[in-house]
Length: 215
Length: 222
Figure (spheres, rainbow over the protein chains, first blue to last red):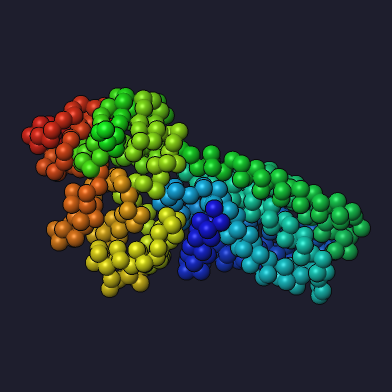
């Protein structure tokens, strides 16, 4: 399965490098929204739960753009004809989405700090981002697979995905708030919740993805 | 002991919602022979191929492909059939060689086989060009190469000569034609298409099965 997933992932990354359809759109969306918040709130800096909420809601909505595109260029029948474990498709798509999210955040987090936080950003945000990205990627690839054969993909993905991602949004935002001069919280608890969410959705995806791709 | 048939269908059914796309299709095709599938647009020909390729589940009747029962043993069929449908199943932004190399990896086939097939279908000079820059006929040749990359026992071909000039069609004959020696199911609108057994479909139902008779098959299109 790992070999098949690797082949699909390499192909997806190669396509993204050539078409630039997902990551640039996600980056542009995030940066534009932070600029809008900068001027719309008419404040040079945000702090606490407001800063955390702006950061995570924007990242979550940009992830939807990536999820919508995950299967857009896929020639799924060609893959389904091969004698491979279909979970390899989920693994490849989830890994591709994780890489896209990290690439977006490499630009988005400094842009957020520059536009809405002022100088300096606590590196403690990195593990929170990575744990949230795993959950986003696992659930995003699952929902993208479910919606891949429907005509209303652009509608179905956010309708299904956003409710499923609420625990990620809550845990990531709560874990991040203290880093933005907010009140101290129980960081371990929120990181634990993110880790548990990741584990559950990775296991659920492995268990059901094969059936999702069945006609 | 006689060899088991490559295809055994008994009362095969498939619906799209309430609309029957295939009903009551029954036949047996010995290994190494060619089944021609004829019928006007919407007769259920492509649906039949997609069911046999395990891309669609049958909704009724029984279907055994290469000895495996569908849909229960679909995993046994995948990798043993080659499917050439209306969609080329190629990535327009990847080159011809990258496309075949990708499918080779999925099928566990050596990358050298991809290069060999690109030569065989006459695309060696365009191997590094993106598929989106190839002509329709070239894409059909590349798609045929994709369909036989893993040396399948059964070929499922949906109008395989579409978009091909006579020279290109001759080029593909050793790969997907009768000369390939493979069991084949060929969907065609040409009643003169050579085959060992001819299946006539109308509105998803089987209306004829037997030795090909171009004059009789022509009636399917009236």
